[in-house]
Image 1 (cartoon, rainbow, N blue to C red):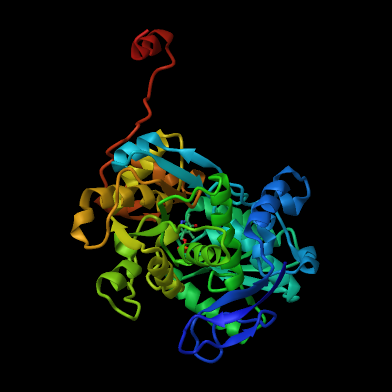
Image 2 (cartoon, rainbow, N blue to C red):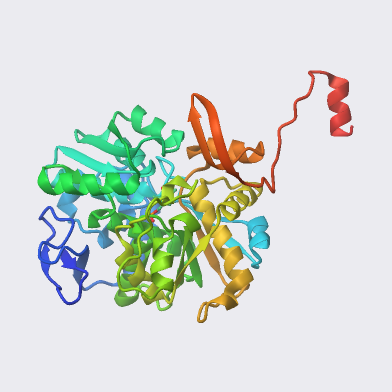
Length: 452
Ligand SMILES: *Cc1c(COP(=O)(O)O)cnc(C)c1O
């Protein structure tokens, strides 16, 4: 098999191409987003499926990686692999979630838990490939804006190289689990006044004006690594393709990469059938949803985006056009869920023994809503018998404050702290609270409580 690859502007009326060896994030001619596109010759999908699977019996680090195992589909040559850094990312499990399925009103639900990655979120899939490109380009300093998980992942990979990581995070708006990782892994951590969208604009400017190499998902090398989520998923399903894949939407890089993977897999003959992508956003941070329902050809941004699911608290998603492409190609849809629906769905997932961070729980909340109200949108159909895979994006322990507050019946949409709580509003119901009990250290009393 031979392949070549290059940057391709996603704007069809521009269509410019550039060598992949350039340091580019946007089309120099029209400023639109770039894809990495490939020209393959003699690609045999059935043979590659065998190769991918055979690597699972190998102990070579790049074969063990659930990203590099699929390296034929990535924009690197064999001689580039010396720049690759792996922490054993990918190969995340599939888990049945019967209680969540029942709650959502569907027959069965399969979870793919990307939170079970080395840094605890799906970001590791794309970070390992972008880090490889950063090293290939000879970068010294890499940077990202982050709601927490991108920075945790970038910092971890950088710690294993001589790349210097700089992260820009919105002050007071990131979950402590994520901040603690970034600090532990040694990243220069810059807390900005302002939200993610402000941080993103700033770091994009800085990287176009300096040598900073930008590691956000606007960088097409990130999305190429994230594509391998789909290869890994379908391999786990023995290439029996599901009907629907549900994924949370924030900056929309993840859903975009799935769409691109599906387009390529269909074109190259890996699959005949294409699952429908369903993107779920939080109601207070739903620019893609607003764009779709208004049939707008421009993004309808959300100023002051709000959700407690901080990973998707984004009002100006960079990859929205690629996400629209993914929805169009897969006959997909985007929907929104409330804070209450997210909180309760997270608790229900917990009862399946599957923890996740709030952003990930939008998937189950979104399925429940689609089942209950599908008829409200023409052309959006969902069948309770479908084969559905929900993508959980982040680990439960990223944001334990949220979980504990829910179970203590103390979760508020707005809470202001100044060492101690000074004000709060927007109380959420703790529908499925599991309150801890305070009990005297007395055997008789405990036996009474246990009913023994
Ligand atoms: C980054 C992130 C998201 C959002 O993914 P996008 O690619 O920005 O849409 C969702 N959940 C978690 C846990 C994340 O870390």
